[in-house]
Length: 452
Image (cartoon, rainbow, N blue to C red):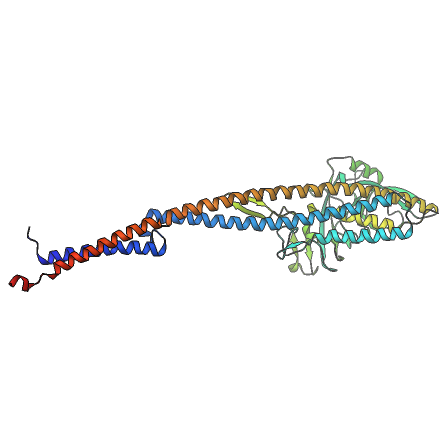
């Protein structure tokens, strides 16, 4: 085969370009620290790099979620611990009250402190983290309690069962004063504007009949009305100012013993004081800023409203605690009852005073019992929160390990071996220089050399 000068030159140039390309490859690797700079150089490395980078990015986001969840739940837990401490103090004050031998000044001090403790419990309901209210479910821009007096109209629907019908006693001032036995259901608010129906219905909307077989009729009264605590058969007294439903004793006792009894009651309230609970966080209700314009109404439905954070692939954790599970409406009404009972107490030097002292003792005992239940409930919520925090700590440790492992894998896949690359670069540099030297010898031959 005849080798021409053109063929020789072309082969020489091809070899020089191949050697320079290889040299450029390792120069680029050494300067970037990466095995490839574009997918076409090694598709397998490129695909694996994309997957590993996605995994590292996901882990970084999961760790951020865990940190945010940890902070949120720490704030929530601290607030619940505060509520627990407040309830313990309220219990201690009530025990002092039950022990007797307290003068008027001591009573006033207890009333003042119980009032402040109640307000502090409610203010804990507006605890926020990063501008978001922690006890408001998904409505994180809406605090649990009013921060000022509010005159919006709410149509509120509450549901009750037989356990909510409580037998109690009430002192009636008269000549002579007396104690009346009553069966009542205590609503979540007092000073109610009106009731939305004239008959009692169960949770399915079916009318509830009295002992005479006819539908129970709701009769609106005030606590100062004569026989407000003594409805006749077939009637239920709705006491607007105290926020109570008073049953006839026969029907009240029957319903309280019936485990299948249930009832829903809808009423309208249009005035809320500072630190009162907002209905939308506790009940099915309709907020009516303008009662005459239904385009301004907002409907709220009681739901779980769990705030879920993703902490791993197919792994989520509910980080929030609902305010109604910590600060119940019964707790607020219990505070109001004990405070009002102390305020209305008359020194036991009259027949009325003796009865009021006995009633105060009963209310104090009931308050202590309810506080104990509330303390148990609060401790349960704190325990649940603590369990979730422990889970977050374990999750964070796992994510930290995963981050290290996947980062190492990503580095092994993408990053060069520095020593190996330097050796290869030096080797190809030698080859390239050698090819230039060899080419120089070939190029030196010219036409004059052949003429000679």
